[in-house]
Image 1: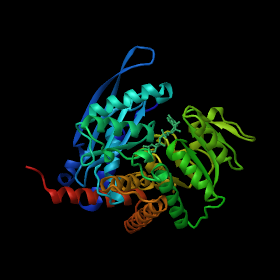
Image 2 (image 1 turned 90 degrees about the vertical axis):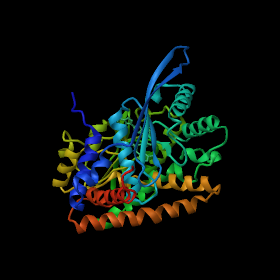
Image 3 (image 1 turned 90 degrees about the horizontal axis):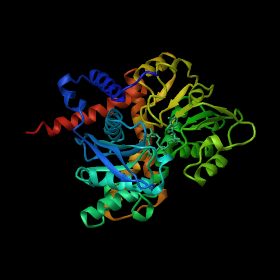
Image 4 (image 1 turned 180 degrees about the vertical axis):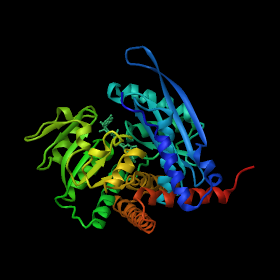
Length: 420
Ligand code: NAD
């Protein structure tokens, strides 16, 4: 059996290390070690065959020190309280590193959307939203899409919440369909942020985008948009994967054809995609390919002490949340591999979620060009700040990002002081 990793332990280790460098005492960081609020709910659903099934769901608010909780909702069979806790905490530090006025939260339902009909997914979404309704709201906690959820699910969440309140409340979720107040550019935002980050990183490394080889694990929202944009920038994407496995072609895959195949039907998987010259590989093999850049864009703990030694990429851009365990991080550092951390690399999603919420509460709408330009205005300086502080402290980019984020969160917590 493979070792079980508790991603929340990872978060606590990094926060403690950053606090030590910053000179914060144990007492200074005591409060941010615990999520502020956790809710577990049981969600009964009438299935298409007439039977009743009960799904477990969570909404966890790690911190509201810097603003309302903000973070996605995950529909996946592996969802559990520790995972949601870690994802909520990463949101706190992600919002802090890009300096947007939010805390961190996350939610999830233990289910497999690949095995559910649209009716069943809608029923789960509505009952889950009703169950967590006391915690969420535009000024309290604002969900968004994550693994297994998308704009359609956000539309149902917004409708359910609005029906319960008796009036239309756009700002309760972000990542909504455009016709319900969704931001232009939100669907592509996380991948676009990963592209900006990759560009910034390669520039620092003295490398060109054109011709640089990349492998991407995960071809959902984040992985597929990242693939599209990196391909447009001239990078050579030699491998991609999804839950069904991966495909590899050293000359570079036909990314537009792959994206067209996957977008035709939400149940299409790479195991059924074909093009000349490709080799089928596993998700594990993809991580160990001889590429210049590796982009994990699926789930957490993918690179761990069991395989970190075999990773050959020189640069890893963490598009997923928590894809590298704390033990693996140390192994990669010793090998001289540069890791651009999740809380910076994938922050584009929450930045444009923030733009969506700002537009919703003001009842205005911005053009896609302006959203993309404003995203770049936040992502580029955030990368530069992390790069600089990491180099000033002779440390990793992950530690650099946490030095900035932990300081902002602790400073806010201390400015508010403890109530009562
Ligand atoms: P998604 O559901 O759209 O896609 C997930 C992808 O991972 C799919 O291709 C799926 O087939 C694959 N996958 C699922 N289980 C897998 C497994 N066991 N092994 C390998 N691949 C597997 O999800 P997403 O929104 O693209 O999120 C991907 C990652 O990015 C997650 O870590 C998420 O938390 C993070 N993230 C997402 C956003 C966002 O805006 N959606 C923002 C920031 C970070």
